[in-house]
Image (cartoon, rainbow over all chains, first blue to last red; front, side):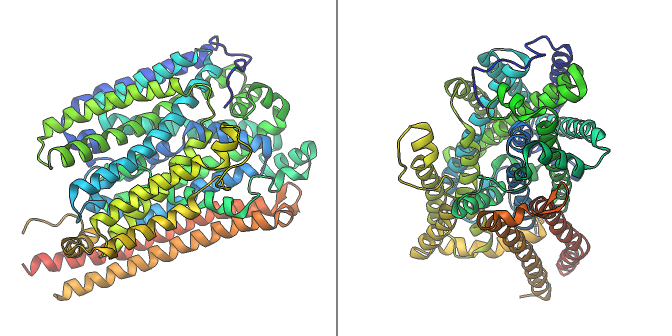
Length: 519
Length: 96
């Protein structure tokens, strides 16, 4: 997203519908928070909404966590400016979900309490594993959060004409209110409301586009080829290098199964069956949304036109709002803007809660207090961590103003895939996995991803303006994911841990049966 | 080793087999799609009917594949796996 561009023609803080929608959403979500706050007196409610969320609700909440403003505005923009290539991204974001449901969702629900570290640490030595796992979580959360905050600042400036800093502070403060007072209950319901708004907004917009093409998407695509040539339906420059393409693909696919804020959602449901079914709902919502986004992208390409989209934002991020203005006028633009804003707020809240859980549940309770903190104490620390993270995200949002942070979402996915995913899989499937193996795998995954991204053309050439990059690929996943597995396996084999291997039988049983009743 | 434990091990193995198969199918389909994009762009640009290229058709089919794989897994676990685990659990409690 570029800075220094003019605000959208019709808005600049004058769009009454946008402002009203924005105010209604904040009002509604604070009412939700108010009700949630009265129930948020225990860690079970704060981290996991009392495990009372239904499959359908959790499906929508998962979809809400996953469909960020970046995917709504970013992918629609990518499709609008480069056609088919945008579809490659949408697909990458969806193919991770079969992995989540097949390998991760149920064992996670049956083995853990609040964070994915609970699972990795299940039969290993608590403190060392949790430090590493929390570091992996926090790295993912931090990069994801920065990308969202910078996106939020730019977007709200473009949509509402507020200053970048004001936008970042508002997002930070409102999100803080949700998480601090309403915990997971408020965060989940905000997420559900946002998912419904986003899906219905995208659906209405797509219908307004398709009505002009007698509800035939192919007629829309045909019109696009008439205006811009057949190349818009064919792959362009996006995957020019097979290694880079597969590397990105693997990071998106396995990264989904390692995102702490997504994984945490599986603790909000009563049992493994509900966790499983909720993924089916989530994927139905997310897949439909990406298909709609594809219509929106081509709709913007044809009805708004590429030059007009580029004129407002060179990255194409304003394609969907511009399309809303073109087909539905000022009122609809206002509605879509408010939806985009709600989207950012909800995603940021989910990320902050996941980060706070890593700091309080993993680091404070299990590392500093050896697992012996009272519930009251843990809740106090979790709230403190929430405030810390909110302040930090506001500060980072402002520090990174005007920087190109688009690569950070990819970086977050790459770390999730290389640090969190291998440790989770090895801890659940491999009897001989050890504490040292887990530590080594997670730390290697995080460090190698950071290092290779730093040495890649993304940082060296695009940001630091060097002429060459030491590491030739933009996406390290193809190397870091398998290497993290290898590091975890070799380190475990080098020094076996008898207690960890003994615990594996208990783990295997609990994966399938859930918490064993006291004998 | 009780009968019920052996039984559970068998159910568990069946679930992991299905889970790993579905994961492998998704990975192969998706990586195959990326390789096709990387090595044969003109093929994916082939226009099948006006407005529809092979690439777009395959893309939509991959989204459908993800849905279908998830449906297969959820249906199987909901109808077979859950019952078998519940049976095992009941027999375990009764034998106590």
